[in-house]
Amino acid sequence: MALFGALFLALLAGAQAELPGCKIRITSKALELVKQEGLRFLEQELETITIPDLRGKEGYFYYNISEVKVTELQLTSSELHFQPEQELMLQISNASLGLRFRRQLLYWFFYDGGYINASAEGVSIRTALQLSRDPTGRIKVSNVSCQALVSRMHAAFGGTFKKVYEFLSTFITSGMRFLLNQQICPVLYHAGMVLLNSLLDTVPVRSNVDELVGIDYSLLKDPAASASNLDMDFRGAFFPLAEGNWSLPNRAVEPQLREEERMVYVAFSEFFFDSAMESYFRAGALKLSLVGDKVPHDLDMLLRATYFGSIVLLSPAVIDSPLKLELRVLAPPRCTIKPSGTTVSVTASVTIALVPSDQPEVQLSSMIMDTRLSAKVALRGKALRIQLDLRRFRIYSNQSALESLALIPLQTPLKTMLQIGVMPMLNERMWRGVQIPLPEGINFVREVVTNHAGFLTIGADLHFAKGLREVIEKNRPASTSDTSASSAPPPATTAA
Image (tube, rainbow, N blue to C red; front, side, top):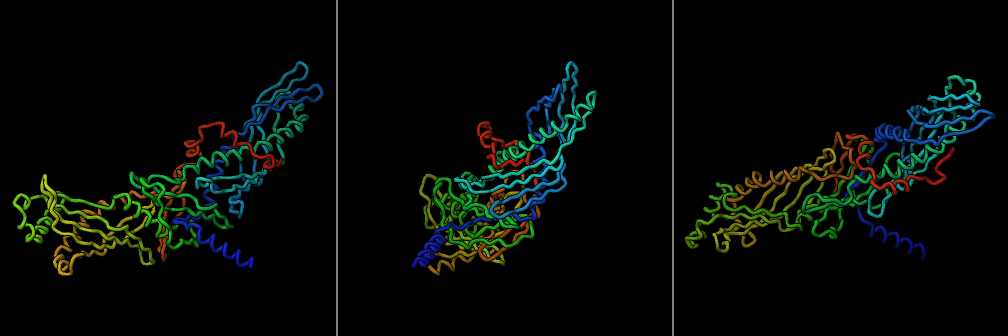
């Protein structure tokens, strides 16, 4: 009985789980590019290490080592890979750090000082970033674990007291090695918890698309890592700004990502596009009214000739009134994605009327228009763009079949008007695109779109349009109190 109860609860939980409208997969192919950019950033961060002054006494000798600076990082071997439960693992082995410091030595009344170069060799660093979903639905670095070890240090002492420094070098280099071991992990912890999170803050979560509609890219659950990829499920839902709490139930097919040949894959379900069209419908944007000179001249003449019998019965003050052509979508358009292509079905009303000045408009006819548009989806940089093309067009009367026959002569002119007048305006807006959830400074290149049953996928490679340092400096947290609080790692993260 307990087994059946547990099974029922599992099924209930699965039924209540929200399906993603957008998925992103980062594959191991992307890690080499990310590693190159990340190591440049890491080198710059390690150069900020501050080592306390080292003072000591040995017999009659007093020494002081100060102003220790890291000047360079040389990497012999490094590896970045996905690791289940740890998400992202960076391992550096047999690296070396170049250092420069100031030396001061006092022996009785004799003093010696100057600057000297040193090197820390056999540096090993092992750090793991754990990614998770925060309460707002944003992806965050939630934990950084770190182990760092400097195997040996060497300093080329010279000057008057060269022999003395060589005698004291064991004490000095051992002390500097200990201090350096203690400083590497705090720097990496701060880089992950503060600086990388400031980069992730540039990923849009809930933002405006335009003045009418917004989009919600909230993470639905923590990112899932395997040995070869990192998968993220996003809500991927549009909403009208006037109804911020409204959401369209997601009953579409869940997009699936199985490919691993490209650096990154993005999948969008039919729900993603349906929520966009329903949001614009609810915002009242899916209507068009053409009055007077806005109606093409040839179409104006044809409409007046078609409804001549109705027009001549009107008063002379109305007969020469401007013509009005109004298109209004009756229900939210729906998107259908098949391996053969993507289509959008639209049903709208077409109203033809005369608009005399200072008088109520006079309706001449009302008809239903069914259209089917083909949609070509493209990804440029970080913008998802769509180009629509009119494929099928049909008008009919909702009053009688006889009136539908009378509308046949209007079929071609109205279709031409849509192709010449309406579709360019629609495509101009659609080509502006909507941003996908990707950090600032990273773009997609060499995109390939593939249609499936109920969803489409886009495979692409990554390109750093800006360096990590440039983006992080631009978005660095303004509050230093939060930074200092987040930059102190737990004691267990540093291994000397």
